[in-house]
Image (cartoon, rainbow, N blue to C red; front, side):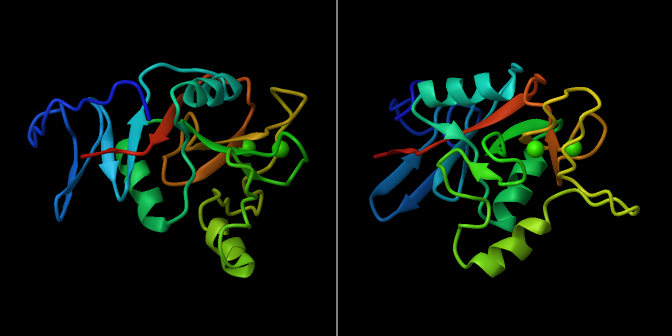
Length: 179
Ligand SMILES: [Ca+2]
Ligand SMILES: [Ca+2]
């Protein structure tokens, strides 16, 4: 349950309610400024926070940093994120062991082998084989332990690990209000 949800009726056009699922008599509504995709509401922040602060802020609202579980969801996010955004993925605890903010490992979602191959698709690949995540230490000696859609110069259709201290926009997810 996220503050900012409106229960004041359905406006299909305009920005007040950006998406409506109609299923029988049930309507799922996202708050003002949010976007409905599938069964969840997504909020693309306008402010920038470091990763830890963005995780804390999202939790405070009752939602969480986005957890990406399908190609469709990734495509939806990258089509609306016009610059780099934090996602809910980090390897802060153990280097190289990527965890979602719900404490699932990156490869724990569904069939492990399938997940490994699936998520490999999203990390940015360079022709010189220096693929992301590369835990680059040039700017932050603790390395890069937080994941983002895109980086400062490359598109949001791929993932990068980045210094968690960097300030970026972030994507917040919450369940819709069901009416
Ligand atoms: Ca790392
Ligand atoms: Ca990196």
